[in-house]
Image 1: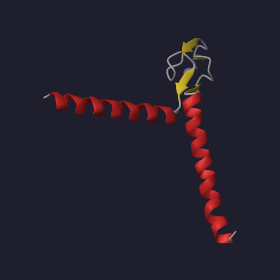
Image 2: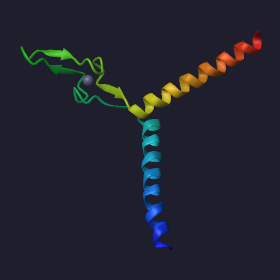
Image 3: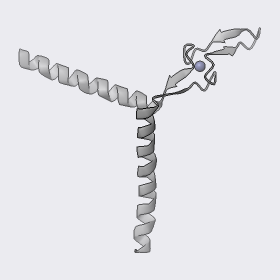
Image 4: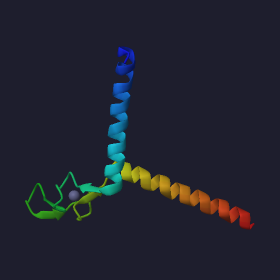
Length: 91
Ligand SMILES: [Zn+2]
């Protein structure tokens, strides 16, 4: 194979593999442990050291992955667009 072709295609294949892997991860495991409380759902307050409910995950210990958040927004947008188009035909 031509060395120039190898130089060009190798990063492209690597980026494609990483993207597909992340999309699969978002499809299979949409939630990730909360970074703030490390999945506990609560953390210690800095002053009195009492336990508080984590505000980032609202106490469940999980947060939605960014890729899945984008996927849900795109799905919601497409669904609303189709519903809007269907309503226009009814008029
Ligand atoms: Zn949390």
